Length: 269
Image 1 (cartoon, rainbow, N blue to C red):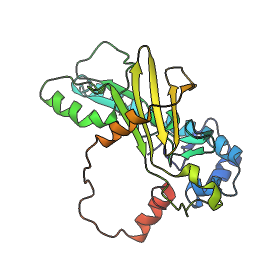
Image 2: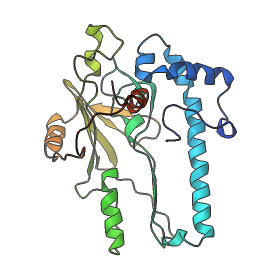
Image 3: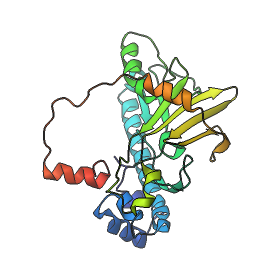
Image 4: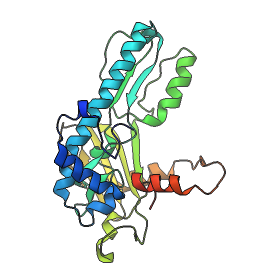
């Protein structure tokens, strides 16, 4: 959780923030960032907090380095499957590639590169040569990679079908949790779906949200190149082909402390 909101790196890793920025950010921690920055707090402040986020990333990098050094010192590194990744990225006020009326705040909505293009560094046991994979990869293949490695096979994070999915169902109507006038809420409503695949020499994303649809190229570093309208039918068929799996177990009420923590992280309205 080092690089997750709230962005509070230890002092030794906070190279790009200062006391003023830390104080502003702590003031915003009274609730979800979405409520704060769609409300009265200015977006320049959210953009500035990316400096604290960078410190958090540097902190996470340092601890990963320490972990690898200790595995190596214990002569375990060569026998260990190492996977360094993240479940999502963060938005700091960027405009959504799907709908320009929407600004991205943490990971509450949106399916662009800010949220879906995350690190994925893999070292298999006894692997000595590096290889860069340019095809879209899916984190949902992690269990398969582990199971196959136990059986002595090296599986890839690239799915057999060649495409990967990013999806978000926030925010649901009527969106009363959004501090916006009712007439301005619709662009934030989900579901948001995107399918990423490699076509020819480019990595293409087809993204849809209600009546919005767009296709953009994500192969170009640091920028998304718009191409044309997205392939809505392909996205819808891909999403409809997914199986519904119940991973919740038994339903039970959660305590006030857990509910408040989820609220602060933006997972619960």
